[in-house]
Image 1 (cartoon, one colour):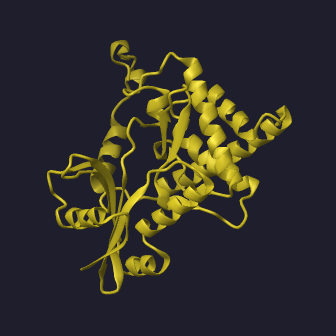
Image 2 (tube, rainbow, N blue to C red):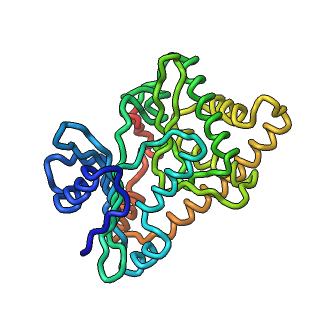
Image 3 (cartoon, rainbow, N blue to C red):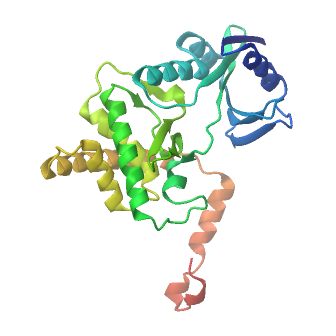
Length: 293
Protein backbone atom coordinates (compact mmCIF):
# COMPACT_ATOMS: atom_id res chain seq x y z
CA UNK A 1 0.00 0.00 0.00
CA UNK A 2 1.07 3.55 -0.71
CA UNK A 3 0.75 6.08 2.09
CA UNK A 4 -0.29 9.60 1.19
CA UNK A 5 -0.35 12.45 3.72
CA UNK A 6 -2.50 15.20 2.23
CA UNK A 7 -2.66 17.46 5.28
CA UNK A 8 -0.27 18.08 8.15
CA UNK A 9 -0.02 21.07 10.44
CA UNK A 10 3.68 20.41 10.99
CA UNK A 11 6.39 17.92 10.07
CA UNK A 12 6.10 16.27 13.49
CA UNK A 13 2.39 15.66 12.93
CA UNK A 14 3.15 14.13 9.53
CA UNK A 15 5.61 11.69 11.10
CA UNK A 16 2.95 10.54 13.58
CA UNK A 17 0.85 9.27 10.69
CA UNK A 18 3.41 6.61 9.83
CA UNK A 19 3.76 5.55 13.47
CA UNK A 20 0.04 4.92 13.85
CA UNK A 21 -0.33 3.22 10.46
CA UNK A 22 2.71 0.98 10.90
CA UNK A 23 2.30 0.17 14.64
CA UNK A 24 -1.38 -0.53 15.29
CA UNK A 25 -0.53 -2.59 18.40
CA UNK A 26 1.84 -0.10 19.96
CA UNK A 27 1.70 0.47 23.71
CA UNK A 28 1.41 4.19 23.01
CA UNK A 29 -2.05 3.64 21.54
CA UNK A 30 -5.08 3.66 23.84
CA UNK A 31 -8.18 2.40 22.04
CA UNK A 32 -11.52 3.81 23.20
CA UNK A 33 -13.70 2.70 20.28
CA UNK A 34 -13.30 -0.40 18.13
CA UNK A 35 -16.05 -1.16 15.63
CA UNK A 36 -14.17 -3.42 13.24
CA UNK A 37 -13.54 -1.08 10.33
CA UNK A 38 -13.46 2.01 12.56
CA UNK A 39 -10.85 2.49 15.27
CA UNK A 40 -10.54 5.54 17.53
CA UNK A 41 -8.45 6.41 20.55
CA UNK A 42 -5.49 8.39 21.79
CA UNK A 43 -1.82 8.27 20.84
CA UNK A 44 0.85 9.38 23.29
CA UNK A 45 3.62 11.35 21.65
CA UNK A 46 7.28 11.32 22.71
CA UNK A 47 6.83 14.49 24.79
CA UNK A 48 3.94 12.97 26.73
CA UNK A 49 1.08 14.69 24.94
CA UNK A 50 -2.01 12.77 23.85
CA UNK A 51 -3.63 13.32 20.47
CA UNK A 52 -6.85 11.85 19.17
CA UNK A 53 -6.84 9.58 16.13
CA UNK A 54 -9.57 7.96 14.06
CA UNK A 55 -8.73 5.28 11.53
CA UNK A 56 -11.32 3.84 9.16
CA UNK A 57 -11.10 1.05 6.62
CA UNK A 58 -13.12 0.70 3.42
CA UNK A 59 -15.33 -2.37 3.44
CA UNK A 60 -14.42 -3.34 -0.12
CA UNK A 61 -12.27 -2.35 -3.07
CA UNK A 62 -15.30 -0.88 -4.83
CA UNK A 63 -16.11 1.29 -1.81
CA UNK A 64 -12.48 2.40 -1.78
CA UNK A 65 -12.85 3.58 -5.38
CA UNK A 66 -15.93 5.59 -4.39
CA UNK A 67 -14.02 7.16 -1.52
CA UNK A 68 -11.16 7.97 -3.90
CA UNK A 69 -13.63 9.90 -6.07
CA UNK A 70 -15.92 11.46 -3.45
CA UNK A 71 -13.49 11.73 -0.56
CA UNK A 72 -12.51 9.46 2.31
CA UNK A 73 -13.68 10.04 5.88
CA UNK A 74 -10.47 11.91 6.64
CA UNK A 75 -10.99 14.26 3.68
CA UNK A 76 -14.64 14.81 4.63
CA UNK A 77 -13.54 15.58 8.19
CA UNK A 78 -11.21 18.29 6.91
CA UNK A 79 -14.05 19.78 4.86
CA UNK A 80 -16.32 19.66 7.91
CA UNK A 81 -13.68 21.38 10.05
CA UNK A 82 -13.35 24.12 7.43
CA UNK A 83 -17.14 24.65 7.38
CA UNK A 84 -17.27 24.97 11.15
CA UNK A 85 -14.19 27.18 11.26
CA UNK A 86 -15.61 29.66 8.73
CA UNK A 87 -18.85 29.94 10.70
CA UNK A 88 -17.14 30.34 14.07
CA UNK A 89 -18.01 27.02 15.76
CA UNK A 90 -15.81 25.20 18.25
CA UNK A 91 -14.30 21.89 17.15
CA UNK A 92 -11.11 19.89 17.70
CA UNK A 93 -8.42 21.20 15.36
CA UNK A 94 -7.15 18.67 12.78
CA UNK A 95 -3.44 17.93 13.01
CA UNK A 96 -2.87 15.54 10.11
CA UNK A 97 -4.81 13.45 7.61
CA UNK A 98 -3.63 10.59 5.40
CA UNK A 99 -4.78 7.68 3.23
CA UNK A 100 -3.46 4.26 2.28
CA UNK A 101 -3.91 3.64 -1.45
CA UNK A 102 -3.95 0.17 -2.99
CA UNK A 103 -4.82 -0.64 -6.61
CA UNK A 104 -6.23 2.85 -7.08
CA UNK A 105 -8.62 2.60 -4.11
CA UNK A 106 -8.54 4.14 -0.65
CA UNK A 107 -8.26 1.19 1.72
CA UNK A 108 -7.68 3.14 4.95
CA UNK A 109 -7.88 6.74 6.05
CA UNK A 110 -6.54 8.39 9.20
CA UNK A 111 -7.32 11.67 10.93
CA UNK A 112 -5.31 13.12 13.80
CA UNK A 113 -6.79 15.95 15.85
CA UNK A 114 -6.16 17.70 19.12
CA UNK A 115 -7.47 16.20 22.32
CA UNK A 116 -10.20 18.14 24.10
CA UNK A 117 -9.23 18.53 27.74
CA UNK A 118 -11.74 19.17 30.54
CA UNK A 119 -14.61 18.38 28.18
CA UNK A 120 -17.33 15.76 28.55
CA UNK A 121 -20.14 14.46 26.39
CA UNK A 122 -23.64 15.82 26.80
CA UNK A 123 -24.81 12.90 28.92
CA UNK A 124 -21.84 13.04 31.31
CA UNK A 125 -22.20 16.82 31.64
CA UNK A 126 -25.93 16.65 32.32
CA UNK A 127 -25.96 13.56 34.54
CA UNK A 128 -22.51 12.87 35.93
CA UNK A 129 -19.42 10.74 35.25
CA UNK A 130 -21.10 7.56 36.49
CA UNK A 131 -24.55 8.17 34.99
CA UNK A 132 -26.11 9.39 38.22
CA UNK A 133 -28.70 12.15 37.94
CA UNK A 134 -27.28 15.42 39.20
CA UNK A 135 -29.23 17.38 41.77
CA UNK A 136 -28.35 20.77 40.24
CA UNK A 137 -31.48 21.44 38.21
CA UNK A 138 -30.28 24.92 37.26
CA UNK A 139 -27.04 23.50 35.87
CA UNK A 140 -28.83 20.99 33.67
CA UNK A 141 -31.15 23.65 32.33
CA UNK A 142 -28.21 25.92 31.59
CA UNK A 143 -26.69 23.09 29.54
CA UNK A 144 -29.97 22.66 27.67
CA UNK A 145 -30.08 26.38 26.84
CA UNK A 146 -26.46 26.39 25.66
CA UNK A 147 -26.85 23.32 23.42
CA UNK A 148 -30.17 24.50 21.97
CA UNK A 149 -28.77 27.94 21.15
CA UNK A 150 -25.66 26.51 19.49
CA UNK A 151 -27.59 23.96 17.42
CA UNK A 152 -29.95 26.74 16.33
CA UNK A 153 -26.94 28.87 15.35
CA UNK A 154 -25.55 25.90 13.42
CA UNK A 155 -28.75 25.58 11.41
CA UNK A 156 -28.99 29.34 10.88
CA UNK A 157 -25.53 29.16 9.32
CA UNK A 158 -26.89 26.60 6.85
CA UNK A 159 -25.01 23.66 8.37
CA UNK A 160 -26.19 20.30 9.68
CA UNK A 161 -24.68 17.06 10.88
CA UNK A 162 -25.83 13.71 9.54
CA UNK A 163 -24.88 12.13 12.87
CA UNK A 164 -26.07 14.64 15.46
CA UNK A 165 -26.17 12.70 18.71
CA UNK A 166 -25.16 13.40 22.27
CA UNK A 167 -21.83 11.55 22.07
CA UNK A 168 -20.76 13.90 19.26
CA UNK A 169 -21.36 17.01 21.37
CA UNK A 170 -18.65 17.86 23.90
CA UNK A 171 -19.18 20.46 26.61
CA UNK A 172 -16.55 22.44 28.46
CA UNK A 173 -17.44 24.69 31.37
CA UNK A 174 -15.92 28.17 31.24
CA UNK A 175 -14.82 30.41 34.09
CA UNK A 176 -18.09 32.37 34.10
CA UNK A 177 -20.24 29.29 34.68
CA UNK A 178 -21.27 28.99 31.04
CA UNK A 179 -20.60 26.17 28.61
CA UNK A 180 -18.70 25.95 25.34
CA UNK A 181 -20.04 23.39 22.88
CA UNK A 182 -17.62 21.49 20.66
CA UNK A 183 -18.77 19.56 17.60
CA UNK A 184 -16.90 16.32 16.89
CA UNK A 185 -17.17 13.64 14.19
CA UNK A 186 -16.40 16.31 11.62
CA UNK A 187 -16.89 14.10 8.54
CA UNK A 188 -20.69 14.23 8.93
CA UNK A 189 -21.10 18.00 8.56
CA UNK A 190 -22.72 19.32 5.39
CA UNK A 191 -23.91 22.61 3.97
CA UNK A 192 -26.90 21.77 1.74
CA UNK A 193 -28.27 24.17 -0.82
CA UNK A 194 -31.54 24.40 1.09
CA UNK A 195 -31.93 23.66 4.80
CA UNK A 196 -35.69 23.38 5.16
CA UNK A 197 -37.61 23.44 8.42
CA UNK A 198 -38.30 19.73 8.12
CA UNK A 199 -34.59 18.91 7.80
CA UNK A 200 -33.86 21.08 10.83
CA UNK A 201 -36.43 19.27 12.93
CA UNK A 202 -35.25 15.91 11.60
CA UNK A 203 -31.77 16.82 12.83
CA UNK A 204 -33.26 17.56 16.26
CA UNK A 205 -35.07 14.21 16.24
CA UNK A 206 -31.78 12.37 15.72
CA UNK A 207 -30.34 14.24 18.70
CA UNK A 208 -33.44 13.48 20.76
CA UNK A 209 -33.16 9.74 20.05
CA UNK A 210 -29.85 9.70 21.92
CA UNK A 211 -30.30 12.52 24.46
CA UNK A 212 -33.86 11.45 25.28
CA UNK A 213 -32.49 8.40 27.08
CA UNK A 214 -31.37 10.51 30.04
CA UNK A 215 -33.47 13.70 29.79
CA UNK A 216 -37.07 13.82 31.07
CA UNK A 217 -39.84 14.90 28.73
CA UNK A 218 -40.04 18.35 30.32
CA UNK A 219 -36.37 19.05 29.55
CA UNK A 220 -36.77 17.77 25.99
CA UNK A 221 -39.68 20.17 25.43
CA UNK A 222 -37.65 22.93 27.05
CA UNK A 223 -34.84 22.22 24.60
CA UNK A 224 -37.25 22.55 21.67
CA UNK A 225 -38.60 25.82 23.07
CA UNK A 226 -35.11 27.29 23.47
CA UNK A 227 -34.24 26.13 19.95
CA UNK A 228 -37.27 27.89 18.44
CA UNK A 229 -36.37 31.10 20.24
CA UNK A 230 -38.14 33.54 22.53
CA UNK A 231 -40.49 34.76 19.80
CA UNK A 232 -42.00 31.33 19.25
CA UNK A 233 -45.51 31.10 20.65
CA UNK A 234 -47.40 28.17 22.08
CA UNK A 235 -48.93 27.24 18.72
CA UNK A 236 -45.55 27.17 16.97
CA UNK A 237 -44.08 25.04 19.75
CA UNK A 238 -47.01 22.63 19.56
CA UNK A 239 -46.76 22.35 15.78
CA UNK A 240 -43.00 21.71 15.91
CA UNK A 241 -43.49 19.08 18.64
CA UNK A 242 -46.11 17.28 16.52
CA UNK A 243 -43.79 17.23 13.50
CA UNK A 244 -40.96 15.86 15.63
CA UNK A 245 -43.22 13.14 17.02
CA UNK A 246 -44.24 12.06 13.50
CA UNK A 247 -40.62 12.06 12.29
CA UNK A 248 -39.54 10.09 15.36
CA UNK A 249 -42.29 7.51 14.76
CA UNK A 250 -41.17 7.03 11.15
CA UNK A 251 -37.54 6.57 12.15
CA UNK A 252 -38.43 4.11 14.91
CA UNK A 253 -40.68 2.18 12.54
CA UNK A 254 -37.94 2.01 9.91
CA UNK A 255 -35.36 0.92 12.47
CA UNK A 256 -37.71 -1.72 13.81
CA UNK A 257 -38.51 -3.00 10.35
CA UNK A 258 -34.77 -3.25 9.55
CA UNK A 259 -34.19 -5.21 12.75
CA UNK A 260 -37.10 -7.55 12.05
CA UNK A 261 -35.69 -8.68 8.69
CA UNK A 262 -32.24 -9.56 10.06
CA UNK A 263 -31.45 -13.29 9.76
CA UNK A 264 -31.82 -15.31 12.94
CA UNK A 265 -29.02 -17.70 13.82
CA UNK A 266 -29.84 -21.32 14.49
CA UNK A 267 -28.77 -21.07 18.14
CA UNK A 268 -30.94 -18.00 18.70
CA UNK A 269 -33.89 -19.72 17.03
CA UNK A 270 -33.52 -22.77 19.28
CA UNK A 271 -33.20 -20.55 22.35
CA UNK A 272 -36.31 -18.57 21.40
CA UNK A 273 -38.33 -21.71 20.77
CA UNK A 274 -37.28 -23.29 24.08
CA UNK A 275 -38.06 -20.03 25.86
CA UNK A 276 -41.51 -20.01 24.31
CA UNK A 277 -42.14 -23.59 25.51
CA UNK A 278 -41.12 -22.74 29.08
CA UNK A 279 -44.21 -22.32 31.34
CA UNK A 280 -44.85 -18.86 32.71
CA UNK A 281 -44.40 -18.36 36.42
CA UNK A 282 -47.22 -15.83 36.49
CA UNK A 283 -49.59 -18.28 34.84
CA UNK A 284 -48.75 -21.03 37.30
CA UNK A 285 -49.13 -18.70 40.28
CA UNK A 286 -45.46 -18.94 41.38
CA UNK A 287 -44.33 -15.32 40.90
CA UNK A 288 -41.17 -14.53 42.85
CA UNK A 289 -41.52 -10.95 44.15
CA UNK A 290 -38.01 -10.91 45.56
CA UNK A 291 -36.25 -11.29 42.14
CA UNK A 292 -37.95 -8.82 39.88
CA UNK A 293 -35.97 -7.77 36.86
